[in-house]
Length: 273
Image: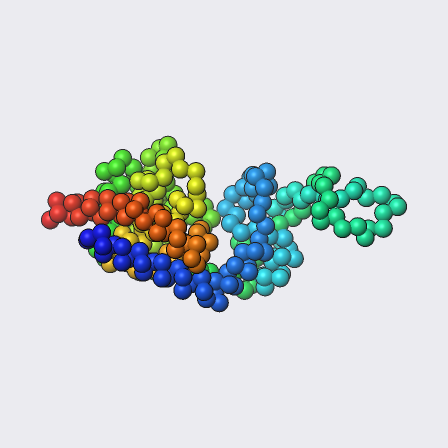
């Protein structure tokens, strides 16, 4: 496929991201995400050590506000919350505004992962892909991975991870419980990481480039990943004009990675024929 045609596909991606981030669903998504705290490195370690599969963590009351309830008997995940203001004293009236006062200590507080709750579903802007892989694109992309020195393993991954790419071991893992169409999209995404992002520290940009590459590759292969890719790109790039600007800024890198993957796929198919 000519580069100009792939440019058109990136235009479709940009238009989809714009439409999504102007929707009521996106606003509900942002409202919910704003209710989740961004935990410190130390608390992230505490959460991971107590519940390695945790994905979205909040306190008991926060879950209630989101329309979900912690199930009876669930074991809390304990983190440390800062105590702000002066140390309490008998003379204190308790009326001082402590929101901007310094931290004088920490106290343990319980939180719970979404998997420990029941209730209203949270608004999702990345809908997992459904469907089969009748043309065998997963295997074809796996051959591409081998040609650039990467192994591919389909396995069960913790939490909501769909796949990962480990540069040190030149290995890609794909969540095997996802439907075949989602596995194809994820493998294209991880191949883009392998081609573009070793040594790169800008995670949001890396995720935007990888998913944009996967969108282009899958579109050429006949797989529409809009339901997943629009929301994924918007979530990492900020949505709206900001996301579109980032896509345009990385257009050359995205096209290069997509072109490399598609060229290898074409060559492999030709050899097989």
